[in-house]
Length: 63
Image (tube, rainbow, N blue to C red; front, side, top):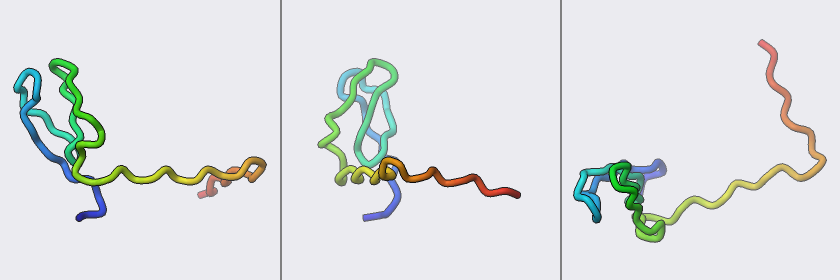
């Protein structure tokens, strides 16, 4: 398994148009069909933790 998403291809289940997706998750721009997110080739990544409330935002670096 790779660390980065893999571009995958399939024929749309509704209209047959060849579509590309990430890790087996697809959406057809021609007819609007989408496959169930659970049909992907690997689990979705977990959510990143948010900063705790009241913590200062990182300051932009000066050039």
